[in-house]
Length: 345
Ligand code: NAD
Ligand code: ZN
Image (cartoon, rainbow, N blue to C red; front, side):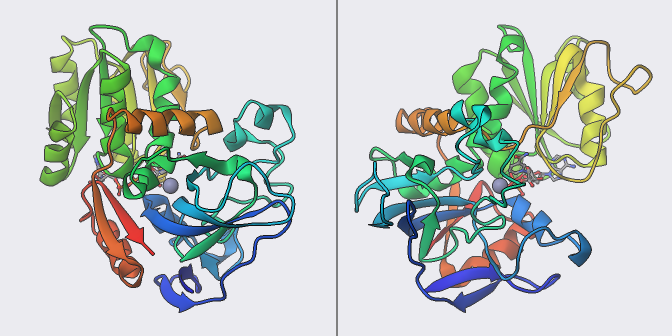
């Protein structure tokens, strides 16, 4: 079968021919129908050799949707032909945190060598993929697979981030979304679907600001040195109750710190290499909470799929064949993907 692998540190991903994997005991084999490309893949492929945490070659793709093709011995709960989305941040499945469905926070996964598909384990950018357990599979219930693929990360991650701030997003409040790419364009829709907040989107690209308005942002502002002042102006000097940074660079974190209201939330989702100083004298208003959430829980993925089924959230996608996946990564790197790039293996 064809797969997209990262094989050599510093080289672009390659289209390769590999054997179709076989599901081991308890595992499930999926025929992949759609796989999303995430900016995190580009971050991973920029890490130097001494920091690189995963075995190579590595089949990429941590946003996967597929049809159940075979069950390993003892695997139950799904049947051949079922259409499912893959929950990616696999945990040990046994501890208290995993029992709550918060496998993204499992404290044992790393120690046990459990790694997400596409981020250590063979991922979804292939014709077939093996999923460790049926519990990682969420039924699509009729949702279009191409729509569904981005939900597994670009939908789930902002949903998890936004849920933590819901008590602050009361009528009259403002939420700022910095970076309206794969995650950000779904974040805007989630904020509109879940809260009465005014949504202000910031980006550096005109096309992305247009997409932000199309998917429901009330305001779309160029993300530059003036952006925080404009957010203050829009909020009568108060600032935004919640700022979600889907870039996470030094420059955007400075905008976030200068835009947030007293007692607001700054939520850093992007892994752009910037850090935020917390502490008196660090530049944040009093009582601000700062967090760096990771992916989301199993139940939250079920919620996001349901929101999409109800038409409250949809993925703006550009599709590619598996042979063109390296090109899609190039376009993502160049900032040319509007919404999410989805590969149809
Ligand atoms: P993307 O490339 O699709 O979108 C990034 C967007 O940010 C683009 O629209 C780009 O124009 C915009 N941007 C770039 N510089 C900007 C600036 N200075 N100000 C405002 N906007 C700017 O990326 P994505 O796949 O949506 O991922 C977003 C970030 O989230 C990445 O850093 C990714 O690695 C990270 N991520 C984190 C998690 C997590 O669990 N924390 C999960 C998935 C992705
Ligand atoms: Zn991702």
